[in-house]
Length: 118
Image 1: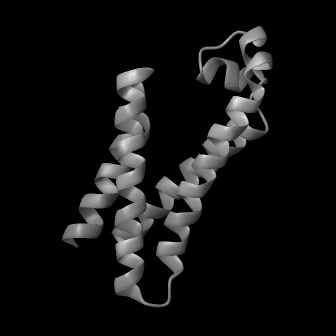
Image 2: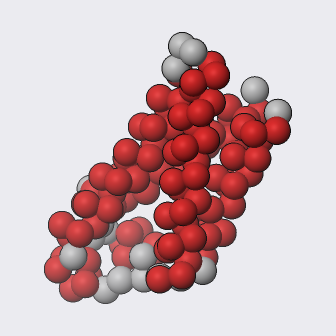
């Protein structure tokens, strides 16, 4: 049960990121979150929406794993998508800022460990 809660939290986080990137990219919240100027946000709006779509796919995969009728297969789906989140967080930490690993990677790592060992 605790593993499912953590997986759901990671999914919710990625839904939030999706909304922020796809629909709120030029708002003060997104400008602060992504350390952008208004001009940078305006010129990269399509890029932000594209990133948001990928975060939506991660959330969808995690939710699919949680609701799959075959629990064993659902667990495998969760493991795959949590690993994708962790890889994306590692890449973000290496190429953008280390904080991404803490904010996105840590919850996914905890969720993955819980799925694997509970």
